[in-house]
Image (tube, rainbow, N blue to C red; front, side, top):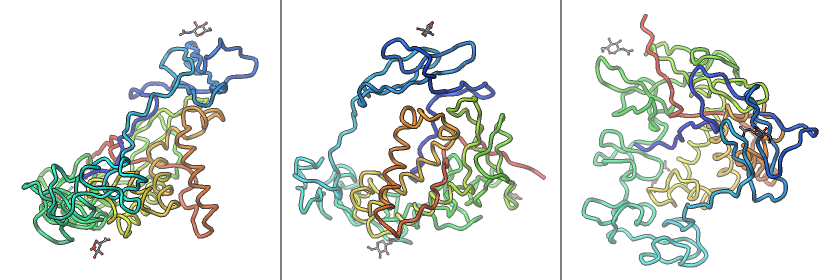
Length: 368
Ligand SMILES: *[C@@H]1O[C@H](CO)[C@@H](O)[C@H](O)[C@H]1NC(C)=O
Ligand SMILES: *[C@@H]1O[C@H](CO)[C@@H](O)[C@H](O)[C@H]1NC(C)=O
Ligand SMILES: CC(=O)N[C@H]1CO[C@H](CO)[C@@H](O)[C@@H]1O
């Protein structure tokens, strides 16, 4: 199985039961030493923030418990070279330019029956088998797969059989369940019955309250109890980045924010465009952006980030938007911009936020 889920890393690491630092924009009367963008006031455990206005290419990454000055962002180490199925202008843009050229603005891969050293080399629709030859991906229902990459477009491998993502119904068995996640399940969540040592798809468990939910302990964030399995989940109670040092509950699989994200993810899995991606790049932002409608691609990225960053984006003071959360808000603006261009686009899920998967969900079995 492959998990799209990003691990939930709050921008500022926190320990359980810790009180939270507060984050405020600096008052005009406060004088900062040149270049300071974050001033830590220990008595009140508060960071006073001031954006790096001199040059927009500078940014602020507040260091815990210290004053911080503006710095240049770390050079992006990620190679921008493209994999087969992604867009290019010249053959030099393609990672495997010794295998395939840039043809009609798409990087080519090794064809079916061509050589490969792993599945990244193969053209879309193919994977690299044990003999190091690209072969066609298996369609749904075929019993032969060892991993998701051997299954075509929107499908993953479940105990040797290719099955569609987000398709297995509640309480049906699946072959594995890691950190309660399995993308083959309709809800994308699963649970393990340790008596039987078997795994089943879990219903979309949500909260009893509407987000955002302020909290002080993980227990306050618990989902409803699943009536069949007795399972309930907690996304945890995490420190946010707000002036009052408030904590908020993360997002659960049944929360609206997660369901909006999952709906858009399902649209990608069922699209024709996913077939244009190299098998290893099916979940990758670059392939999605290069091949899908712009508004749909940004919507997916925005909804995913809303889930992941949910706690961090609650009740921010105004300067946080351009400082700590700038990537999220840039994405939000881009998405809004594509909707404005497309009158049929929908604003669903725009309200705010969500959070995902491996967000260290704490599972608690409730025995009755
Ligand atoms: C932060 O800067 C202020 C003002 O320059 C100074 O008084 C304070 O000691 C500094 N705090 C730390 C943790 O360096
Ligand atoms: C786990 O499996 C056992 C044996 O089939 C069953 O009695 C029990 O109810 C199951 N527990 C859950 C939580 O599904
Ligand atoms: C879910 C999905 O898009 N399935 C398609 C995968 O690709 C095959 C062959 O190209 C189609 O027939 C399926 O509909």
